[in-house]
Image 1: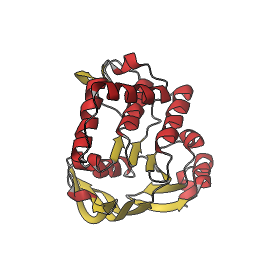
Image 2 (image 1 turned 90 degrees about the vertical axis):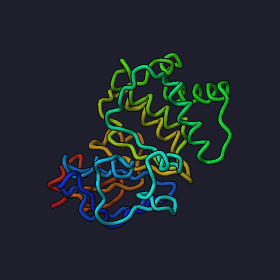
Image 3 (image 1 turned 135 degrees about the horizontal axis):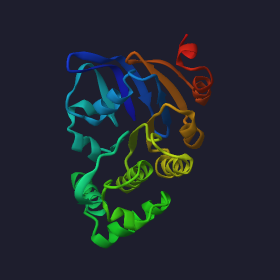
Length: 247
């Protein structure tokens, strides 16, 4: 579903990704772990199409198309979802308004009919229930006054509503307490565990992987994937640290 080949990317004049190669097929949850400064967030931003990140070499193919040739909104319409490490606040815009506009924009791009207000509210209520989020929360301004855990849960509700084919989740466990972590992890499983979907899950910690249970784990260091294995690789990292495992 996603194939990254020899990807080089820079921010300003500083090279960050230095020949990253990775393949994530449909039906797979693939976790990426790595030390700070390894390039994990840069990879996320390149896949999402964030301005300021220049790809200097290599390719990214998503569902058979050149992902790098698409604008960010086109990537979203093709089925790519990006979960942020720090979800932003949007004052003056309610979650319900934001999510309905986003969903119908994607449906229009795919040639589908927009959802009516009633249809959308039913969908939103169902997805909010998965994340144990009250609909009153979705009537509030996007992330304004939300705790860290509430922001992440709201973002997972957004993922459920948009129903992407591929989710790139950048440290979704950041700032979550134990209960919120279990709820968010269960939400990822309920929304994205499917033979025709896939997840690239970027994390520092084993605790989220205990819930989501990835099929593969890769170590990203120095701008490249340096090792890939099964879930046991994450357990080794947790027990021994990056230096010991990579040595």
